[in-house]
Length: 308
Length: 308
Image 1 (cartoon, rainbow over the protein chains, first blue to last red):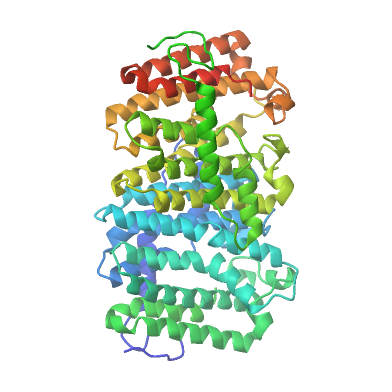
Image 2: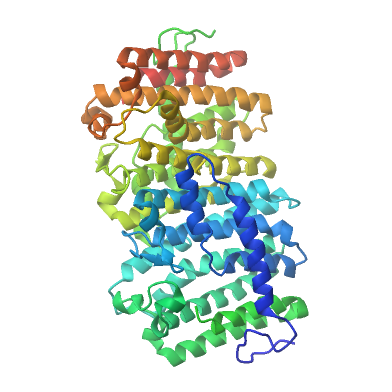
């Protein structure tokens, strides 16, 4: 039932309704995040963390984690604490990326960025707090998962954030700003680390919760790498073709910042073709799971079909 | 063999040579830290992380972790990865605290602060990278410790850094700057979180490695709370009585910043008396361990005896 058809939000290969699926999962994740971080003294830091954590967004990382866990026979309940931890970590990276010393963004998801509301000092601490809490939360809240599996998830999450992951990607990204002679290898490094590492961790942590074997982890890592790169290519395309109202963040920033992007490297048409090829490959990796893979395959399609 | 005698670096109650003990442990910790973080691409971020991680310091948190693990029958080898993780976390907190948006410090341990050498963006990322890597490192490197125990350590480390720990303490500290009407409860909150939480985590993680029971953990938590508070009182005293050459950081900052401190609240004499009382209580908590407690008791004495 696997096809490399042009992407549609509704997967033609089955009656799977991705829009309804994402809406339902987003609601579950929102509810779990809502109760994950109650406000207590000192209220300011909890409010700052919650301001960004509850600012909406697609909740793509949590949903990938839940979907992968289910693909391999696990449950949503098993995976939800890890899903929330992934979103806490993602939120940390957004808060710190937006800081004046970094990308200096005033808007994120249509709202003022954390430091514009709470100040730079609190924004730095809110990020630190979310990152540290993510590790405590996944350990304290996960039920019915062997301790050995949970340890692997902790290590994977750490690896995805550290210099081996998004921190390393962000550093190379900063180094390349203003340079127009960046090659495709460097651009791939930036995105496979800055965006790809945490998407991979989302998929693999969902698998690790079920005690997945090496071959399964490698297959899912290829799925994740492909959708991660496709996601970034589409992001670059949207930065050029979209507007702030649709994106909820400043559009055209990459051009203004003289930032190397896939469309700049390949042009818009080839960039879109490459994104579609990556999505088709990602879907093919999951062919052996049959119908059970439909949600993850539909999510892969959704990446190229999205407009924000 | 326990006494509440005035503090001496050499503990008179035994032939224990604290100076030699600390020197030996520091060397072990330095060697472990040295090999914990090899430089690879992108070199800049690894160099920035190593610049602060290898900048010396007393290595008090790692040494407390090792000593507590040994007190309860564990080994240095078991505890060293946790000890290194504690120092990575501590280093992260120093790098972020020194940022212009926070305490805006140019010097730390006699060297330029991280952001003065690498820039604010890299300093923020170096902190993030060290925090995330600490969790990966403790999980990947710890040998011969049950997975359940390691998970408790992960949760404890997260708790000590998050808004329940040093992030929360730092937030209240920032809120209180410039205020001269801060009460002792608020001052205690700041320090029991900003400094105390990670010192407690150092002691308790050493205990958790051996599978310590609740009563043991509570006793050690009291030891840690007492030495943590004593440590801060002495820090405040040294800020007034010492110079930059001795401290390795800017002296007199608290007075300049109109910061509430224990000497300001109680005067120098009462502050020193209170620190000595706390150290005596900390030592008494460990009385039941007899000779095995001598290193941790000598470390408690060392806190009030130190000049930097």
